[in-house]
Amino acid sequence: MTPVDGPVHSAVRLPGSKSITNRALLLAALADGKSVLRDPLQSDDTLYMFEALRSLGVDVTLTDAGDFEVIGVGGAFSAPAKSPIFIGNSGTTVRFLTAAACLAPAGSDVVLDGVARMRERPIRDLLGALISLGVDAESVNGHGCPPVRVRGGGLPGGKCLLRGDVSSQFLTALLQAAPYAKQNVEIEIVGDLISKPYVDMTQNVMHAFGVEMVNSNYRHLTVAAGQRYEGREYDVEADASNATYFLAAAAVTGGSVILENLGAGSIQGDAKFARVLEQMGCDVDFGVHIAVRGPQTLKAIDVDLEAIPDTAQTLAVIAAFADGPSTLRGLASLRVKETDRIAAITNELTKLGVGVEEGRDFWTITPPAAGQYQPAEIKTYDDHRMAMSFAVAGLRLPGVTILDPGCVAKTFPDFWERWEKFFYTAKQQ
Ligand SMILES: O=C(O)C1=C[C@@H](OP(=O)(O)O)[C@@H](O)[C@H](O)C1
Ligand SMILES: C=C(OP(=O)(O)O)C(=O)O
Image 1 (cartoon, rainbow, N blue to C red):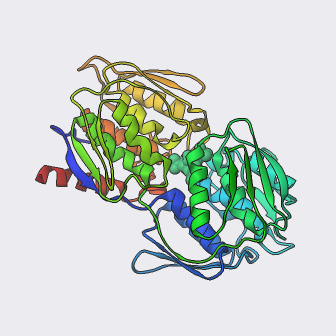
Image 2 (image 1 turned 120 degrees about the vertical axis):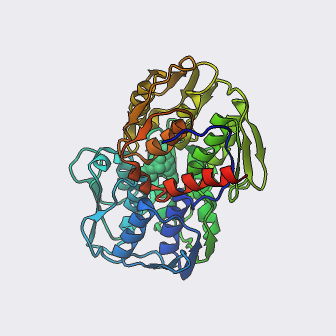
Image 3 (image 1 turned 135 degrees about the vertical axis):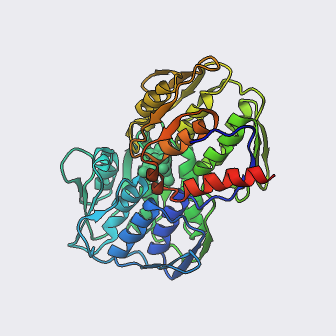
């Protein structure tokens, strides 16, 4: 990569949100009637969901306009056409479908499997909650990770306990399937719930498709039986997690960036990342568009990112250019994502000459003195967010090479084209 020679002033339109696309696809698939999802994300993760739903008998198509058209199955999937259904390394797809798979016909088994890393990502607590709700479900290899097998025949429902500190996707998965249970579903969260804004997003998308839940302070959540999703036209927001790399460009170069299609009304917690940059000295306009102007000198920060985990790697790289040591906390869930993200960031920032102290759930990141950064080949560990975060370092430092840049396809297949266009547009201004 070639560093930029001054502040970046630019604007960007982002593709759709992964998290919203995969929620909307599933709810539209379960709904009564037809849905059209506008501006959805087309990437590995959403295409795994798309293909899995097709295997479960859902008529879902991609239109010439780039929309997803979905004919809902009214709460009852068909027996799977494929076994196992392959879901790559998509956490949302495997967790959401593990809960919904019991809506396949009685006597059929749905098996979900993924890449080697997916076979290390936890799902035990979700299976335990489903079993409490009357579903026959198991981790096929008995180690609490995919592949999973779920027996069709419906969701009896009732009460369950669910650990909150591993992944909020377990809770989202249960809530999304819950309206089709025979009895009300009541979930009690044990311990603290992480990634809470994703549960708000779930509530918002379920509401948009006509289903209500009661969320008592993220401790006790209830969905009444007998509700049904209704097909509709639905606009998918731009992806706020993937917006962070562009905002970071403003922060580390002292430039300015406008997100053309993301604003304060977003239902994504990660849209608040701009507020974190504000604490580092950026000027932030949080209006119809989110806009960030970077300062002359970025201030170091001490911040808890438990609510917005997908922004942590972006901030780690930004912190490497601040005026002193920063501490990023609340990161325990990063250990079980696409890779062990805590270790991956420590390894790769260290190669650049940055001081990194790593704990179970935090980093303290100390920038080197000016001129003491090192060139490096950055490993990406099959993690899209490693590639996109270190693209930000490449704006400031010579000699940054990103290995396996194609791993961005998980959520942002044309990231590199848009990143280049972003700077091309910048130079025109
Ligand atoms: O519900 C979602 O769409 C997501 C929740 C988060 O996972 P955890 O709840 O496991 O932190 C996030 O990291 C992931 O990219 C998407
Ligand atoms: C953690 C992520 O994805 P998932 O858990 O959905 O695989 C991510 O996109 O950063």
